Image 1: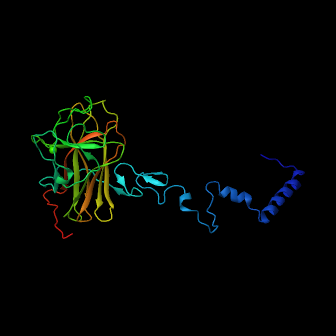
Image 2: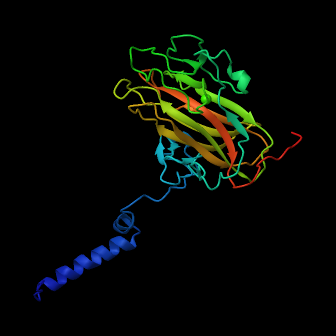
Image 3: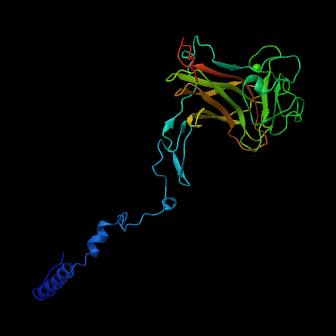
Length: 298
Ligand SMILES: [Ca+2]
């Protein structure tokens, strides 16, 4: 505690009065500094900074998306410029009960190990190059009814397709550094507002420890006009197993137009591995007992 003697009063009063006079002269430095200890208020100079000089994403990323180089990087299951859309996973067995597939590609069957049929026979396109004999090298694919030993025992040699019909073919692809499209197809006569499931069975054809890179597939649904993204979901890594193991992957989406483009794109960069088989590509209505078929004149 400060104890003031009769002699200190005059000096103290002089000091206080000097401070008061300083403040009344308009010098508000102390007060302004205390009130601005966080962010500086915007200075309205009349000039706007250029957009690429603004830090962060505007508007901000939603659903825990991360802002990287002024672009939103969305967590799994979310997409859109600011991660505002949520993708649906596969439909339940109950939702798919008594529904016939609107689209089903089994790749057919035959006695020859390599099918001579081409993607156009199944009404789709791919950016990979087809081979009709060994070897299915990087960037190539084959329609095959049992896996050929192309890489010194790295693959599940002799393993067969998912459909299960005798001599049934599968789509075997050796993906590479380019993020190619495995599948691009168009479906028509969808019912606007109806929920659908776009799915495929995938298998990693490498034996455990034999291949470095795990396949990963990005599923997309786009509009036929304008190429707008309607839904997107990644499979995640397709893992190796001791025997060839098929697993269903895909997404669900609500049709906003009568026709859509369905896509499966490689989501794993690299050629050391990244070898997979696809079979039974399907589109089904997600709603027990519904046809999901709405003919239109488009
Ligand atoms: Ca098949």
